[in-house]
Image (cartoon, rainbow, N blue to C red; front, side):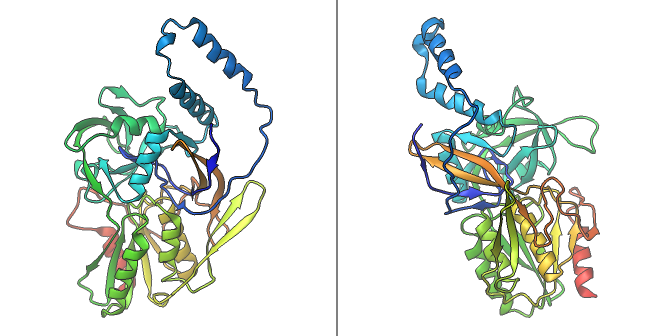
Length: 392
């Protein structure tokens, strides 16, 4: 295998965007090198060579063996044996799909998936305005079957490989939802997914601005800069920040957005490595919205970078969280890219909020719990509670 190219790292969710690529979702940190040279210990690769030799000599269909495919398969098996759903290897095509997704557009159904504690393929969040959202997929839905393929034993990237497809093609998902006794079958038609970033909507209360952040891709902070300028030039004096269904993304983008609310040099999040080393990520400003009273909306689809942003705003701005417990994705992944176009994402640390707490698996508990009612589109009880808190 060729040597790694120094490249990004991610925190996230990760997670994988359904029918897209591996996301990482996740609080994806870019532009830094974290690769540490080390010598492998207690790993004997001669057995692998013996098995390959046996295939070459004895396998009935040895003439059809593809050495590159076998190499990638061996690497995938090695990485998957580590037992971490957020550590995985991507072949060149999967890597290309990943970077296409980060740029904000891809073909698929538009949802992010991860593995739950039982290692079941689970919806983290359907993205706003996508086929997945329109079909009724919800956070925490467990995917039991994709077309005629059962998902038991599938890795995340295998599931993505099956679900991903061209615009106009259809697939059928069989999902299990906690509140339903029987599985549900959903037919979804794939489309070109333009990942939404942020919207600013007026409310009846003229002094309250409502901002919804859908994800954190490489364009998010620039888009939020536009939103922030509109807020500052409006009559709004208070803010609702909606992070519901936000599966995360590039963490630097979330940190830049946090800088509008948190004064310079205040800690937004810390990174703790296996040896206990801590690295703080601090606000770089401008802090022009720091005096605005805030309420943050969260739910079980809020993950990774969105959890970090919510936790930082609660810690630094005393912003209450309204809604449901968040997903709970708080580990850090480094992404190593190789010259053949493949890449490896490996968990190397965890994120800690400013108070030293971890969101991994535990998630964030809301200060005011309000259950979501996805079937009631006319009445958003969580948003109404946020407005009530800000109106007092």
